[in-house]
Length: 198
Image 1 (spheres, rainbow, N blue to C red):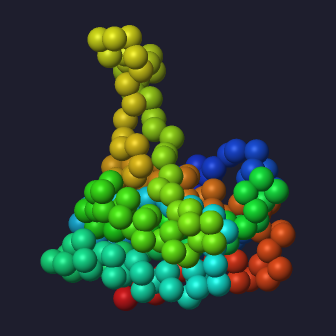
Image 2: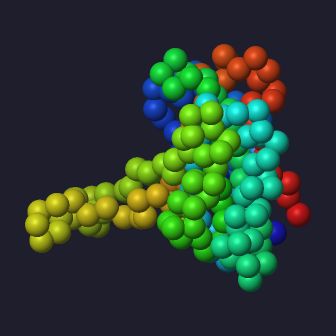
């Protein structure tokens, strides 16, 4: 089993993470990322937000994700991995961040999952989130432009291919562990849920 030293990997550094990170969430993120590299051939990471999650969201997420993956990839032997984090902010109110890592899934597969998860939102809102894509540079660090003088970006708009973009995927998921939006949750110990491992 591959061991990963996360010491040198960057954490998300937005103003929302200035108060630090929740260690148990960060440790579970490291576990699912490591497990994905060890158990999946082509692990792909996606981020979905569910606004105003209802009472069933935490209880049924695992079953819903497993059912979705089994229908989309019936011949795949690996299972999807996931972590869900419940947060509260003054701008969004209560919401749920969900990270799903599944073997070989496409954008269409993830859109279908997102649509299925709307039933767990009081507002009927579950959306696959876009990611920040890296700008392509040459060996000297100069931005490379296309024929129309536009900047060239690397990576898929909605998902990370973890075998190639692992550090970027970890940085994105570390955002889930920010302490700032957890302080308004009544029971902080129950603000996240992670899938079971084999």
